[in-house]
Amino acid sequence: MVDPATAAPPDPALVQPPTVLLVDDEPSVLSALRRLFRTQGYRIEQATSGADALALMRNTPVDLVVSDMRMPGMDGAAFLSQVRVLYPGAVRILLTGYADITATIAAINQGAIHRYIAKPWDDNDLLLVVSDALHRRDLEQENVRLLALTQSQNQALVSLNQGLEARVAERTAALETSLADLAVAHAEVEAHFMLAVTVFSGLLELREGGMAGHARRVAELARRVAARLGLDENAQRDVQMAALLHDIGKIGFDDTMLRTPVSKYSADQLTAYQHHPVDGEAALLPLDKLRGVAAIVRQHHERWDGRGFPDGLRGPGILLGARILAAASDYDDLTSGTMAEHVYTSDKARAALRDGLYTHYDPQVVEALQAVLGEIEAEAKADVVVPVAELQPRMVLAADLLSPQGVILLPAGHVFQPPLIAKLRELSSRQSQPLQLRVLRRSLPAAGSRQHAPSGPGKAVMA
Image (tube, rainbow, N blue to C red; front, side):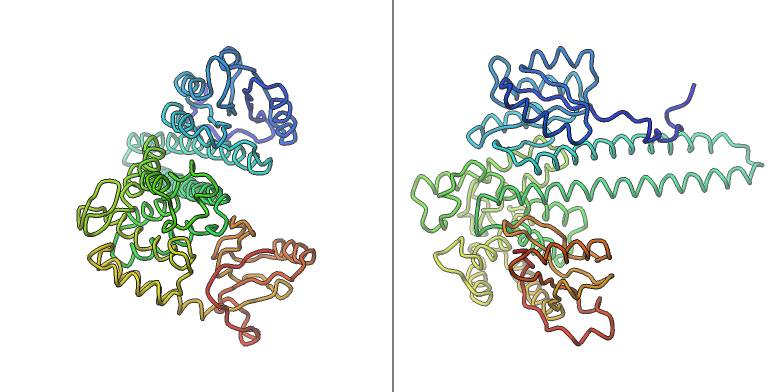
């Protein structure tokens, strides 16, 4: 019998395609989903009710479930809750409408769903979510296998005879390799998790028009302020994730409210707005990994003088991460025109933060934020704008490349290689205006470092 702890990964040629179960009481929806996923090579099963789906799963192993929320009898939340208990290894995804926010939160709490997708869905987004979910599941299973392998080798090392130095050295080398592989796999899982949070944050902002990119900008500011204040890497990551998700409680706001400056809200709108930190915390609490993030989200509208919301906390009683997020978010709101009726310049926004010392903001946080903003302005002068036709291998992207809707296409720090450069040139040739990118000056070839003009601050946006 082969020990699964020491078994090699399965041969990809022998691996069966993932099984995806589609659950919806509307045959037309099932048909549309089946056509969509069939192109991906998945094995498709379907059911028209939660009860039928559970009966099917008793005899058919299922890797991922996509369920509608509103179904007669057992709704999506109740069905996925039972799937969580009976088949915890199956990834759970919920299809829901924006009007189902309360039921969606219930599904998150009860069914520990991986993601929810708003109806009507975008085919590409849904395919990406399912592919990412299955990939993360594979990584988690590989982590378990690698951990079991490491534990097995540790036990073998303990039992080795002291005189067999050569074998000990050989096993030690194998162990170190396994640990390195495990560390790489774990880092990849963490990176994919952060990427998933970033993508989800961008999807939340698609309805907000001019707010596209707000969460990413605030996340970068907050992370750098946290680092400047000496927070450790875990605390910095919590602040960054909280910034990406701090407006998740606004998911139930209508489009008019999302596009109205806070200063113009009616009394009813202001009441709903002041409750969104609580709704945001509630959406995140079921995820143990995000408990600290949820607490920061709840407190990010508290004020230094105790006149904030929802709990009226004051001074050091407010989490430092929330104090950082409050200042960073308000700065971006001021410079993007979503807090007041007009857009503030960077200098005026920084002056407004100074005016809020000891009332709205923690003085040490504002001081650190002012320093970070100065660093960012200096860094922007070190970037150059390069037409896509002049891109060369090993150039480094200086700012996120965004779609017109604010969705990140390439992250800052990406190192360009020939295949992607060719695709970008082909794409640019179809645009009304040639695509230009911000790259780090230090990544330019020596002969070309003086051939491009400095860039201004901001993101590269694809037309």
